[in-house]
Image (cartoon, rainbow, N blue to C red; front, side, top):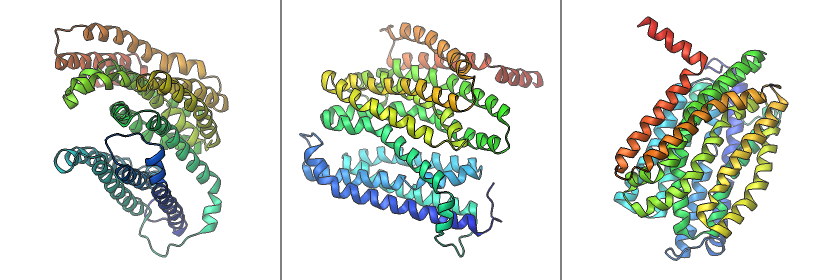
Length: 429
C-alpha cells in the first residue's frame, strides 16, 4: 500500500507517468482539432447542422476524450493504494455533476450539441484535476520530483501493455458509434446514442465490483494464494451475475416505458426501445467480463486482453456495417449484443486456458448459468406484465422493479456464502 512515508522513487514514477499521459492527452486534442473539418465534411451526415457547427462539435469531442485519458492513471493510484472510499466519492461526484449538469445546461442554457460537449469537456478537465490532487495526496507531497527515464523503463512493459489495453478497450466501446455516425443520419444516430446512454447504466453495477475485486485479486496473486484467488473469482462472478442479468432484462423488456417516463415522448421512446433491447443484453455480458478482465490484469497478462480485443474488432466492424446498411440502426444494435456474447465465450476460454485451468465449465454453468436461468424465468413473467395494456407505464415499471428485486434476492439465497451470511445476521437479530 502506498502511503505518505514512501520515498521519492514512487513520486518520480507518478510524475514520469503523468507527464507521458498528459502529452498523449494533448496529442489527442490536437489530432481531433486537425481532423475536425474533414470529419464534418466527409463523415457526418446532417441536414440540421452546418459544417462549422459539426467541426466545433468534433473538436469538443476530442477535448472530452483527451481530458478522460489521464484520469485512468490517477484512478490506478487510488485503487493501488486501496483508497476505495476516496476513489468512489470522486467518481460518483463527478459523474453526477457531469450528467445532471448536462441536463441543466441543455434545459436552461442552450439545447445544442455544442453546449453538451462543452460541458462534458469542462467537467472532464475538472475530473482530471481533482483525481490528480487526490493521487498526489495519497503518494505524498510533491517535492523534488523529476522525470525519471529509468523508472519509466522499469515499468515500460506493463505500462505500455496497460495503455494498449485502455486504448483498445476505448476503441472497442466506441467503434460501433464511429461506424454508425457515418452510416446513419444524425437523427437516427441520436436515437442510438440515447439508447447507449440508458443501457450504460448497467456499468453502475459492474464498475464498483471491478474496483473492489481488482485490488483483492492483485493482493492474492502477490501472496501466491491461488486457491483463494479461484474462490474469490468464482464468488465475484456469481454476485455480479445475480445483479446485472435481472437489471439488464428489466432495461431490455421495459425499455419503452422507462424511456417514456424519462423524456416524456412516446414516439422517441418506441424508437429507442428497439435499440435498447440489444444494447442492454450486450452491455450485461460486457459487464460480466469485468471479473475475468480484473483477473488478467492482476496476473499481469496484458497481452491476453489485447489479443481478445483485436479479435473482437475484426468481428464488430463488418458486422456493424452490414447490419446498419442492410437493416438500419435498429438491427445494427444487434452487433453490440453479438459482439459481447462472443466476447464472453472467447475471452473466458482464453483466460481459463491461461490461468485457473479446469474451472471453465463450472464457472460458465454454475456461476453464470444459475443467475441467467433465473433471469430467463423472470423475463417470462416480465413479458406477461408488458402485455397488460391496461396498466400504465408507471405501474409496469414498478412491477418490473419488484420482479427484478425478487430475482436478485432468489439468486442471492441460492449462493452459499451469501445465504450463510444472511442466516447468521437473522440469528443475531
